[in-house]
Length: 348
Image (tube, rainbow, N blue to C red; front, side, top):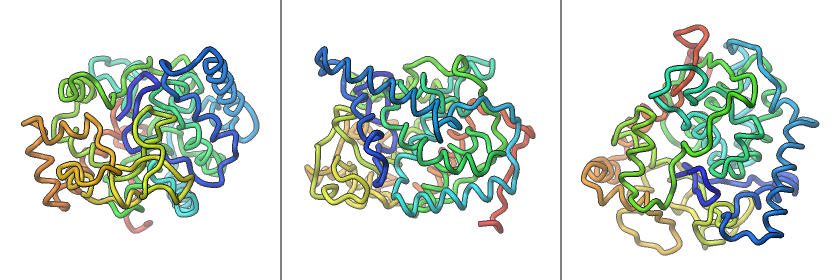
């Protein structure tokens, strides 16, 4: 899960994909918990923040902050972008981090705010440096860098659509369900339209069940959605240097793929299935991560009924996950045309 401080661990884990330039790896230092930074560390964090801004404003990163005046994605470009995303994922094994990008762009939504884009949500604002530097978004500069070439090639796809398309595609390519997605999301046009920091959930709050409900109910999601979406932790790893959670390396992560290290929730952390619920329930292996917000799924009565079902019935999990993911991907989104655009299954 994620939160507004640098102590956060985020939805589906951060994966630093192999072959990224060393500078992007250094950027992850910016996620180190504030309380553990010395004065020199604070200077380093500031330097890393400057690198994020420099990347976003220069070279291939210029596309990351271009103010989009486009109001709709085009179907043929969406189809082409999806194929390009598949190539990136196949080459880089980066399913977890692009899923996280889509989740974090959407997960800032506040149902109590009616005005767009003040309500937050899936509007592409996460491309702007001010939001990338939120503690909960540590490392997501790497996901943006992976997707920038796709955006540059398929310019008629909005950033908001690109992030959600990549997220849904990554789930499917990892063996998960097909997400019933629609596209046509309108982009924000400037950093002044970014949401405030603090809307994403934390991994280790004092009262995990109360915290999860407060955050997700604010988005308009219910208990079943919370548990189903938590199941995406079947993918990815937590890196302590970014989040403050997890081991530096385990027997499941020491050889990658991608950059070695971190601690995963499951043994096969690039495979989407119901292993997360099985492993959290059994707590059978100290090399597998169990956060307070994971453990509570089998402790809180309102969550437990869903977690127990998903642990024994993968089909039920896939069905509910696909619905919850689609719902999340539309939070705060403004569509043009209003009914959205569907990518016909025949184009898959």
